[in-house]
Image (cartoon, rainbow, N blue to C red; front, side, top):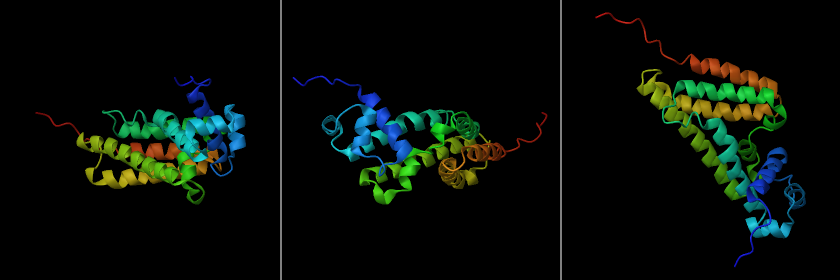
Length: 204
């Protein structure tokens, strides 16, 4: 019978995730990970296989917790233009209220800027993240267009624009969280302006 773990795997992952988020993959050593998780390298290797394996699990933890919390409203089956605008409004609020955390940027975007120093699995996770974000925006804008709220011809280019802009905001947050929050506010107003004017009601 396997011996039960003497530690909380989710707590270990969250600690490793936050350290990678703060320092990046390359600047985080196994010794650093031992100190932040409270596990020795033997236990870390037994659980995750390697530093690369732990990093891959930390990226998944980040996507499942931090990214999911931000994107949950946009991923709702009823989400449309309003929820897309709200995402950027919420991000602006997070950057203002907790710049110490969100001023780190996005762990996945940060990983994408250092691809030469990261394992292949991490590069694949970054690509999957970009594709998922783009698909989330595309789905919400498609629903909005189907309801007559926004221009159907602009759905695809706008989903690409929003994805690239979001990634740019995350990078800018590492330089100046307050200014990145202002960018979120401006984008929120721009997205809201995509709402089509329904025009005057017709009388029967």
